[in-house]
Length: 264
Image (cartoon, rainbow, N blue to C red; front, side, top):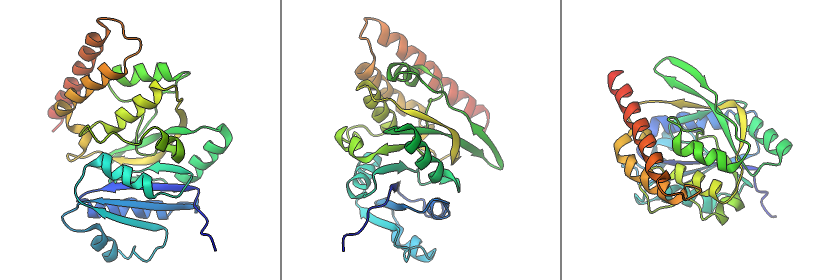
């Protein structure tokens, strides 16, 4: 008998975050929508993820599929998840984030009613004991969103919680494993540059825990990659525009670093 594929594959790439990963997975399992699988790719954790999931009593759940690979980076780990996922939709979840109980149900309903092939959602940001909803903008065209991604101080999307048609993501070539960070930004810019419209679900479906280990805090390391992406994806290619966009981007990243530093 042929196994029926789930509607949604929640894909989590992880390295060395056992306690956070367990909370993340449990948030998915508590979902009010039950037609899903959880694909976990252990990207060379020092303590195998299998051990922490076994200790938490999660390995017996058949909805969880676990793959371990040698340390290869976030892009490679997410591409591995894409290869083994069976659902029509890929829902990305960072290993230190959690889904709301109604998150998958809202995603499924929004996909069904809009006919979208790619959606991004609002989210809840948690710093210590303080939580606040982050409301993201919507865009009429891919081009407008592309420029907003490159110039807006705060990204107008959250990768965690994004849901993408699996075949579309595969046709795009998945994640670029030639860049070390900002792989989510590169993927979104590549999609927008090819005319793919990202639809906005105006409801928080992810709880984002901001902490000192967040990759997003590598401001200066990311500037070089940002400059590469601006050179690659700016439209139109008017002379001098790239320099202006890079200046805006650099000012934004330095400003965020200063704010974070003063807040410590």
